[in-house]
Length: 385
Image 1 (cartoon, rainbow, N blue to C red):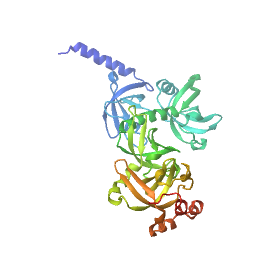
Image 2 (image 1 turned 90 degrees about the vertical axis):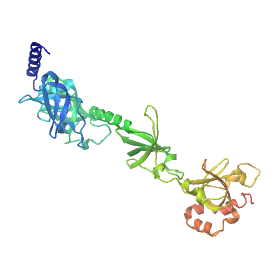
Image 3 (image 1 turned 120 degrees about the vertical axis):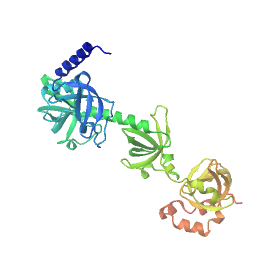
């Protein structure tokens, strides 16, 4: 059984501490309950305080905290109990509160009045503050985009009794981004399908922002089942796309993404539609030292090996008369489904077949003028059966 004297001493101490709480003081506490309008915060010996539920929501209206979380806030009223606030409303903060906000790092609300040399003039409570251009946002923006807007800032410099204030919005945005990034990284796992926004496009692929500044790489080879020669024709900066997470490094710093994995693999239909000895129309996509790659249908390529071309005396002469974009008829020589390889050879005698003629007529006239008919180019170079 507890000693009544000790209980009374503890109650007296708690009461004394509660009386010491003043308006403008910054305190910490633990959220013990969340109601429809306010949340209740246990502030230890100081008793229980309340905070408006709106101050605990993000811009989309979602609660940022849960029961058991600790928060730091400022006492804005002691009448009828303690009332807390996580930010100082514009025009309602005193000089003392601004100084406390500076020391505690509590955000303050300010209105961007106008552009001045090197930055912006911001009205915080009854004080004028300065925000450098570099501290107004994370990304570079036009100054006019901020004038007249009300933001939350952090006071980074407090001098001359509050007459000289320097504020930063960027530090708060970076903190929010770090929290969001940590949550996004926890949700990323191989196989996950996510929606992101294209941040930049390069020759080798595109970087996709998955949220919170976390970016993954969509490599050009994962953009489509067909060979992609120009990444900018597939995605553009600012595009919102759905991608599949292919691989995540152990430290979650490198994330590989795929786009083609969200569509059917054309190779799945190869066993039913392809046979050795079959003749199919194809288009040359690449010419390399050991042969020519031929697209038989979007996403399915065959290889016409250099050995299937007629000898010319010099090893590279066979490729001089072949260029990407040429079309013709090709015979299926081999099929390896496991490695997704098909061996083909061009059949110049079959180039006048109806299916080839129809295919050629559909091609771009400019391409035909530039490269000529594959039949004309290959008839002398390809070994006949």
